[in-house]
Length: 505
Image (cartoon, rainbow, N blue to C red; front, side, top):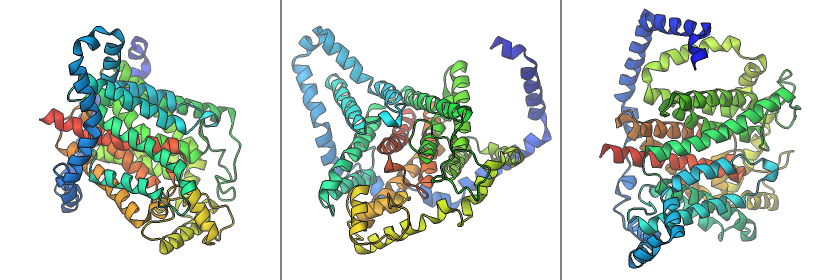
């Protein structure tokens, strides 16, 4: 740090910063940004979108919520009574006290666990590990609940729509067109359910939120450095991922230790906002600098994926973070984006221009997939084909609904895929889950003081919006590990809302 402070570059930076701070341009930009923020705050559209729905408002007092809470907290209550009956015996045991302390820090254990799981290369990955890992955290959580009366699974803070959606997903397995093809996918969804439940229940304060952000940041660092090294070594162009005629100068797409560059891009879209949040709210300067450096490397890796949906989704998440945390920075951000256009590599700019080009084979090949999905919805609008992409492929094959040249793997659209697996009812519950959770996150952020919990909540809600946009062009859940990351981000929004409300009370 001393070398940096004494360097010519640091001196130049401080001089430019001081000159900009006194400039008329800064005052005009900030005035315009504040005006935009006031207009947005007074917008009727924004008021309607941020208003809490009736079902969400009445969820905590409903009979269903109380019944599920009773069932979910029963193991913890039973273990706590056992602890009270044998308190002296348990407190005399070194192993029991160790288990209680580990359970009390379940959120910290989760941060270490995701650092371990989400850096395993795809060729060595086993999807059963996610379920086993979060099941272990669930057991660890109940070890903490044994001694702490207030440490219980939190059903009310999850909300009515995610609960309804997961029940529909569970029902979709036995009601499937081919139940034997659906049971394996039920395990993937159960891993996501346990991840959501444990994360929301274990997080109690801003420290827990930052530790989980640190876990995600570590995964961004490892995967991004791996991707940059791939670019340096050279990546072979795969014609399955790019139209070579429209992108003649584009190099091979970086995929890090994932199986697909789009998957790597979606991974970064979800976790980069948490990395940025850690750079903002870390306690020490070293932590801020390290997180900022990881964010820059992750951004470079995202560019190297050449994932168009990833770029757009990330841009949306950053725009939302700036809008809700520092609205005065919106005009400078727009100006920076415009100034950066001439400096973009030609391959990146060409790739951006193909977003709306339907002659691109990677885009046009998806229309037969969408057509097959819509045909399936017409045949089974309420219940769909059943849980999992395997049964969907079998259903489409048996009824000859697909007429494309490439094999049908999935619908290449998250919402269409959910609809053809669980029917329109399941798709409606899923969309309501996203919409209600994002609303809760941003509504809480708007009224919260500037605290780390606010920053993390805003980052998680922004990242969820980014991956939601990516889902319109791809199916991220095709890789169950990415599905768990998705619900982890979802849980971070709900956990952040819980912490912000606790800080305000």
